[in-house]
Image (tube, rainbow, N blue to C red; front, side):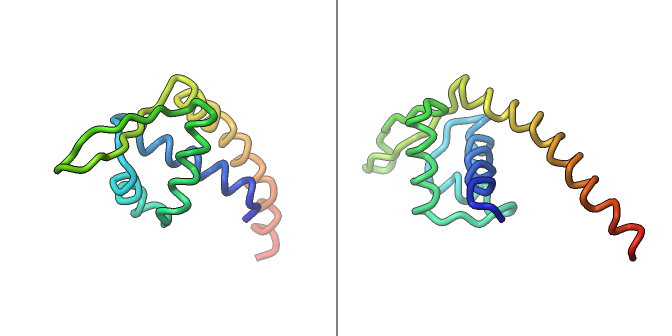
Length: 106
């Protein structure tokens, strides 16, 4: 898969993982696991990029005597998810066009 496309998809997946409630790294990985494998190093790179793009905010809170970073989606992040849903319709139309000839050759 094209690296830029995959990067964009992973960004949206991470945003979707925190869309309904603030979350932290390990829980984000766990929540995404049924759908996609993501290493910690990849996740934290994505989280840093999304924070720089103001799609999420970060706050630290103590949990079991340790500081844990919690990630919160912003309006910009929610807009990115909405935009992705619209883009996905176009991607699916392209996919249907590309694969329609396969039906005639099988």
